[in-house]
Image 1 (cartoon, one colour):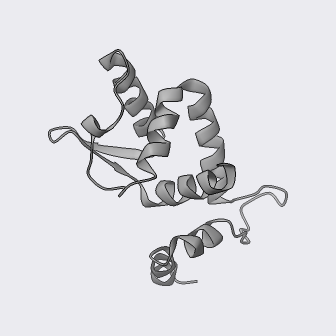
Image 2: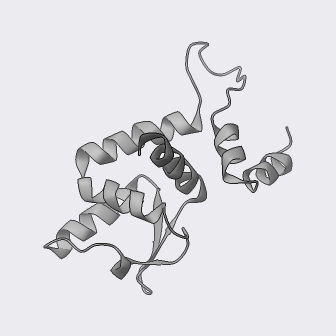
Length: 125
């Protein structure tokens, strides 16, 4: 598949994107028994985030329910300390789940993370 066609598919409806991300494909450079699913990679990363920082996983779940662009940090529930907020957001940035525009105090959730998180929430809640 050409890159342009793949990118066009990623712009489709959310259910179609989840199906695309869950699809296996052949890769000569990969061991035969290794999965390459984007959704599996997200799941492993999300489990690690849940293990390391409950606030970060709560933030991710909340951000998945709204428009993933330009989310004011002030919208997120504020725990007792700013350090906990910074730690949670820093962890999500470290996993490249969110990006921040520091001067404006806005966060953006990566589209594929948004779709994978919403899919997980539908299955588990």
